[in-house]
Length: 163
Image (tube, rainbow, N blue to C red; front, side, top):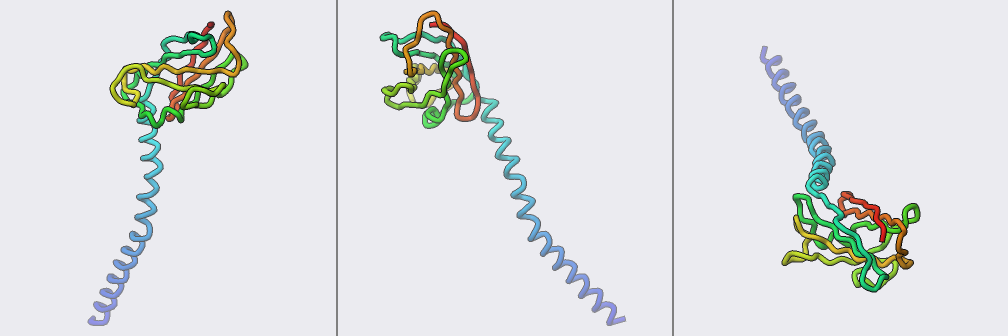
């Protein structure tokens, strides 16, 4: 009887040690498997709370620029450091191109921006962004143009207009 008790105790202790070793090996993998799901959920939440609307397009004073006013109509502010990461597509319908960001607004093609309202540098809810586009060629009156503005997180708005 005494030998059976000792054998049972040894097997129980060995089982507990094996179970603890298994849990120690598998638990970190199970926890880290949820990280991509949480990251994607955060990204989707960011996109859902971001929304923009193109309000108006017009030719600039000298006729060499196009000015586009875009309103932040989402629930989320867009930090100023992310604005240069936005994509802007502009050109005649069927012949548009990606326009690179130009902080100084001197390059053609290039675009720069100015937040028209607000006391800080972030694009807050309800504020309007004035985007100044210098296309590679002069805008031609009567031609139909296409613009698409895509924020850092993939939210976009597009419009067709004539200058």
